[in-house]
Image (cartoon, rainbow, N blue to C red; front, top):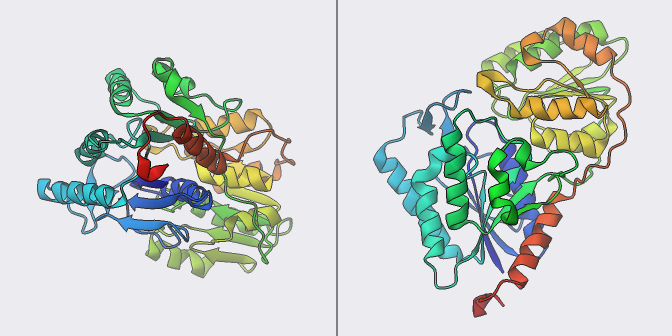
Length: 381
């Protein structure tokens, strides 16, 4: 059985990290996986046994997502888009997948329609079309244009067999952030959250500060650095992880002024293990970071990214605060003082029943759907 998985990260690395966990679970279940990534390459992805096809990268110029650029910081030309489309179609033809999984689209990544619609049409035109699934997180970005929701439903109805919602319906349901979900209800399946496996680390810190990929985390990192000296008596050992995309000049300047006891890192592959050993996590409220916090059952202060009208992280953080799992500091109220106050008020998190086994469940769901699908191709039986 073969699967082609497509992901396009534009700013942070959260989309790539989640999809890499899913691809690894598919591979561990005996599925031959090709992961097609369209964002800036990040070391450590994809995992072993997963074939990586790297398209010429596209990223967002800034946090507004209003303009996409190539690796040379140039706006996307028609020639560049055509070249990307053709490489994606070639990857599909080479992989000959029984399952095609597209992350975010059509709920998001509408900017990539120039290559994804041709991919979907090519898949549907096969003599034995693959199962086509949309892979989407549980909480979507608030959409202020109703016509986009209608467009999403039309694309789902035309091309997709499954909508894999990577969440626990007891925590968040798709219809809460996508009101038209009832119209595609027969295609929706919940997998549980896609958390990584429990890990260990030889390092122990009292406080672990993280900012995901780092592009949108400068305010959080600076506030934590300013708060650290006044909190060292209670928490003497800190690890601040800026993220691989944090600006290098700012990181160098930060390293000079940090007090003794604070370790500055760009990336830690053992991040879940650090949380398992930590007394407190300070972070944004991105999907993957929250999954790691929940897996580690680490006390947490969340500062959800909310620039440019982003609502998804704030929604997630507020739900966790209501469950007694974290404390929240709004980004527009973040200072060293407000962060220190929140940190000192954190208690042990409440126990939770949230399903974190979404990666393995996705593999099971894909296999089950394939096994019961009529007209399977003989080469995949």
